[in-house]
Amino acid sequence: MTFMPSEMKTPLLASCASEQSDPRGPEGPVISIIGSGDFSRSLAVRLVACGFRVAVGSRDPRRVPGGLFPDAVELRSQRAAAEAAETVVFAAVYPEHYHTLAALRERLAGKVLVDVSSAARLSGGERSNAERLAELFPESRVVKGFNVISAWALQAADHDGSRQVLICSDCSDAKATVLQLARRLGFSPVDRGGLRASREIEEAPLILFPTWGGPILATFLLFLFFYLYLFLRQVLLPYLDQGENNFYQLPLVTVNETLPAVALVTLALVYLPGLLAAAFQLLRGTKYMRFPGWLDCWLCRRKQLGLLSFLCAVLHAVYSMCLTLRKAAGYALLNAAYRQVKDGAENSWVEQRVWRSDLYLSCGILGFGVLSLLALTSLPSVGNALNWREFTFVQSGLGYAALTLSTMHTLFFGWDFAFFPSAYPYYLPPVYLLALILPCVVLVGRIFLALPCLMLRLAKIRQGWESARHRPSNNQEPARSSEAHPSLNVGDV
Ligand code: NAP
Image (cartoon, rainbow, N blue to C red; front, side, top):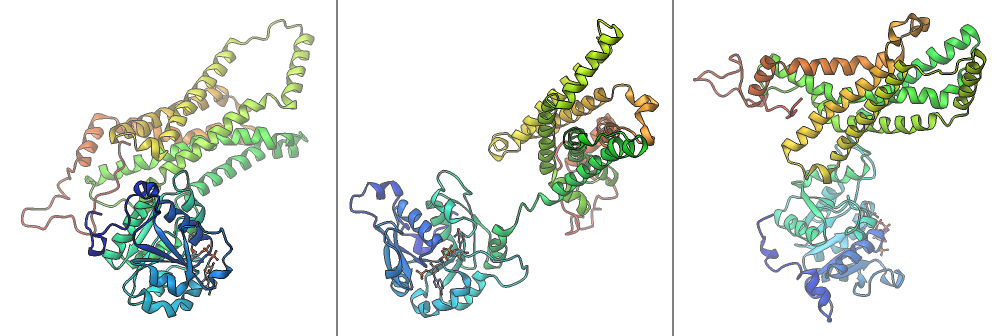
């Protein structure tokens, strides 16, 4: 914020450092907090630590246990605390009790009243607590804020916890005051506009991983599909048909065969929407048309899908390392050795199989390494250190490298077994063949887009060129109506 409202001409406080070094203790305008609960205590601790003078207003100050608040905090009645505040008063009581504060109306007139409450449930459309508080105190300047910070994070803001504070108000002066205060307390305030945004801010702490639902569901459904497919093919049908008992495979072997299939398909799902977006732009001959909603949504969830793919790959690596530790593996090895002795075979080395397993492992390890790098750059602290070109190189260039290596890992695993009829018991193909379909489609699509005729046209479209049917004629208004707006930047597909 660059402007400075009239009441902000005197700073809220001198800097924390100068306050802390002042032996007479903090000086300056008093900030009051109504309510003496958890949030009030944490806020008071933080305000005092940053050199503010704080008054806490309780219904009965004598009931507040000694030592709960720092010594510098003045414990008063609600009325006295409201009066003591020069500009800012926090309402740290539950919204159900706002009406009990009505007697403070006169004392709070003209002051900035900060509503820190969160919504009790997701309701959508209902009036917010802040709007109701503004109605109750029409002469106060109500600001919504600080509710997304927990009492714990308020105290630990220097070390941990979220630093973002969402703030909104209909009064720009009051909002500027609270934005400045949040900054002084070491948080990163975000101006969310007028009080109409308060419902959304109040519901923010209730929302559980809002962008993860779709990707988690897709990954779970893929896991379920591949697991049930393997169960049918390798456990249930052999049991029903030949009485073969493979149920011991369910906890480890089947899970470990499911995980790489899910990881590979999910990784392909990260790159497929980029290809579809490119296809849309090529077909339409413009980038100034909206993608369909489902594609927009899919493009926004690529990071989550990538991280879920990484999770499956990590689990697959750990499971694979543990696979040889199983009792079943030990018995199988002993039995093989016994058969070899019985057959009088001195050497069971098969060159082709050695190549297969070494190539298969090498591609897997390399693919996993590149995927780890991708996951690392999705951390905001790492991603923010990269410029757009570097980020695109990592996410697109290395991403396709990870997809190619993982696909080769699976191809080497399959080797030539897919060409034998024995690989199709009960006419069911092996699971790695199913898992290869989507990654191969994506890789072939990417190669197709690298053809100069398509690549050059796409590059032109992304620089703003439009085919003749989209270009406005000279005497027409520009075609960029509200219908047509720049599509999501899909970067380098
Ligand atoms: P709390 O521990 O229950 O404290 C609420 C305080 O409200 C009480 O200590 C009480 O203080 C005061 N109060 C005033 N009138 C009251 C009445 N009629 N009945 C009962 N209490 C009354 O709650 P809190 O956790 O501090 O939460 C306070 C507000 O902060 C809520 O709106 C909450 O949504 C918000 N918030 C809390 C957190 C958190 O982590 N705790 C985080 C974000 C937002 P006196 O007895 O001294 O009057």
